[in-house]
Amino acid sequence: MTLNSIGDQARAYALQVASNRIKTTLSTLTQEVASGQVADVGQRVGGNTRALNEIEGRIQLAGQLRQNGQDAGIRLQAVQDMFDAVRLSTTELGLALATDPFNDQALLGTRSTEVANAFDSVIQRLNGTNSNRYLLSGEASDVAPLSDATSILDSLQAIVAPLTTAADVAQAVSDWFDAPAGGGGFLDTAYHGTLGQPQRITVGEGVSVEMQTTGASGPVRDLLKGLATAAILDRGILAGNVAERRELLSTGGTLMVAADSAVLGEMGRVGLAQQTVERAQVTGTSTLNTLERARGDIRSADPFETAAALTEVQSQLESLYAVQARLANLKLVDFLR
Image 1 (cartoon, rainbow, N blue to C red):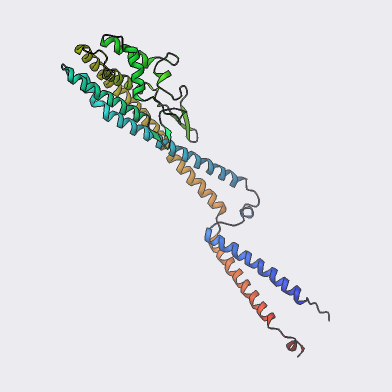
Image 2: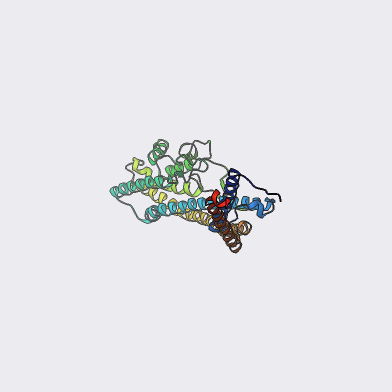
């Protein structure tokens, strides 16, 4: 009769290997039960991870597009809030300048100071930021779009100081604001953002929005033009000529009223961009949920199978411990009996 046996050290090593293997399997199964996902995805898909990789890539893209949409939505809403604040300080003032009779020198001076203060306030609001980015600078979001009100009025004062009629002053101010780039006007000396193609942000698959509104946009310039036309009187322009000063204030108010309608149109355009972002966000969220479900179907572990395997491994581990305990209690005297 042939007897096969192994030494104590070899037996201890074999038991240790078996114990480590069972503990590793137990840890893996415990992790799968806790996470609900298989530990070895490659084994689940039979080594063909192409489909899973494609899903992972689309999930990453969808997440980035959703983040883009959130950022764009925040910026667009900030522009809307900016214009709302600007209109609060200019709409009624423009109507008052265009319609109220000014026949008193002191009242004219008070009104011109009021407009100058409003001009300064509007410039500060239009130089507003969101997330440390200037909203109306185009691509140059790290640069304030507009010079301060004092600098703009200084430039205009140098131009209109020799003029003696309200019509000439208003025309000179208008020409300065409307001058094209390179013409030495507003775009060259007072606007510091970018011109040309607007910034385009992709917010969905095949969907993008343009951040068109800048300090150089027509409605913004028209509003500033109306304010500056009236505010320049605070620099002593047309001094002593009540009738011409009154006419210039009225002209500035009329320009502000017309610009208010243009600003409302610009806000409507921004609102359309907001709707585009919102629709893209809804579609993107639905797509992302679908992709995550598909990924989950591939990676998910069957809870019943995992629980059964876990029970079996626990039994194996208990049996191994029982064998180790039995072997540990063996004595040579008991063997020789």
